[in-house]
Length: 422
Image 1 (spheres, rainbow, N blue to C red):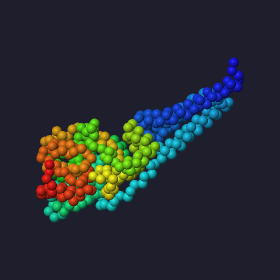
Image 2: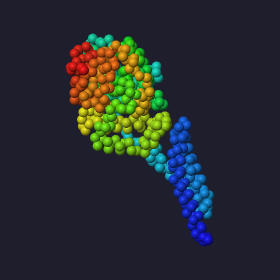
Image 3: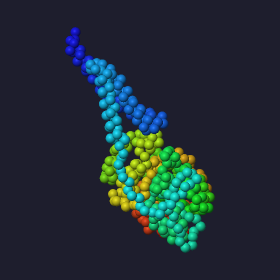
Image 4: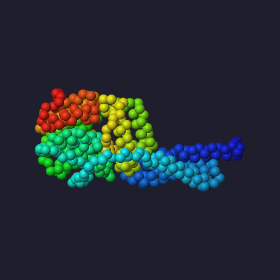
């Protein structure tokens, strides 16, 4: 028969075991409660309250039983242990998940920014480089890539085209650059970007536009052409993204991340290793609106800029070299949500096969995007020409600026191209 002291020892061991179980169970309970609250549409503060409540409940129940076995003052012990654990979870969360990333935004380059307030509800930043001499009938509208990664405003191509008589509009798409950010990030869709472009045509007062789109901007130009074929005079597709993203969902369009140098990969892993970003990533899969509430635009956009700066040269023919490319403020949520929506849009190719618009496709010979993508533009749009640019990757304008500008200007002015198209 066990002695009283042995029985007491066993009780205490059992009690402390239950307290240890409480500590182990409480934290997962907090995480599950937070995610369930977010999934139910709760705000981040309400979800935090639910998580702390789950921590307290998950700790108090087993601790109460354990305290009855291990302590004389079981009620005081239960309250103390539960309070300490809730406080520890709250403090750890404040120092990790809820601690701002602290990436400072780089100063924006100076430019003569104007704004359109469109009937779509978007407030769009743009610049105008007026045409000189005899004015062309249709204005040029530049469409940047990303989605959500605008350039720094007017560049050498804008000035060359303006010298040839074209009014050139360069604008930051919704959610990027100096343009408005949406309070609900699920509003970033391909259809919204197409609607904004059509509204811009109305504000300019032009019957037709000349579209010059790079990367995702080429995809946007094609989507606009499919929706409004009579409103496009000419189109240039530079380093185009997929004409229809679902076609490449399984095989991939070509991955820039495969071309990172070890130094770039190490830097990228460091930037993405924050517990706050890990929690944010989980929330993005659950509810982007909750992720946006946790990490707002003013915090995530500078980090996105730094990531793009880190990996930018991987898009060139020389991934290890520095790429000095001036840029504006990128828009992360516009990038992620528009890209996700692009996987659900209707196929534009049947409509594009009937469009009679002069089109030029430019592709750098070492572009990381699959060459079949550029060929599909040429083969889908009747009469389109494909021009390969030597010594350039995805950012042709940065690696071969003279040949790039000469090719676009020659095409838009009706002069012979500097190289033979395919």
